[in-house]
Length: 93
Image 1 (spheres, rainbow, N blue to C red):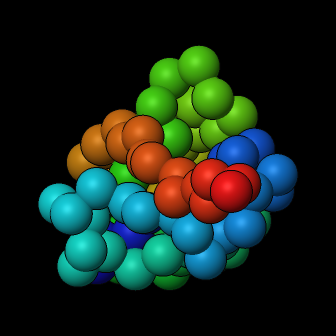
Image 2: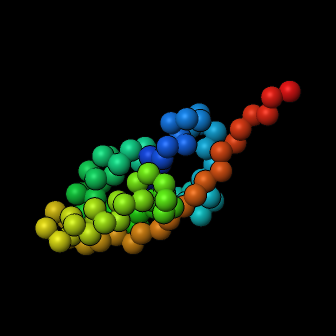
């Protein structure tokens, strides 16, 4: 399974329905918060995980995954990809 974590600060400020993820992630299941992403990881079905680019909230999730593997909570580390997205904003007239 491929998932993308959409838990970023910008989504809380702007309306999430106006979010446009890069097209290469269109076949990914959207997870709206990191806690739900943890549940998916524990199920062991996640092969690829897209997380926010470094420097945004959630970028340390990679270290957290490494610790989960180290202590045996998950068996295999998923392939990680980073993303950034564009927000479609309405211009005032």
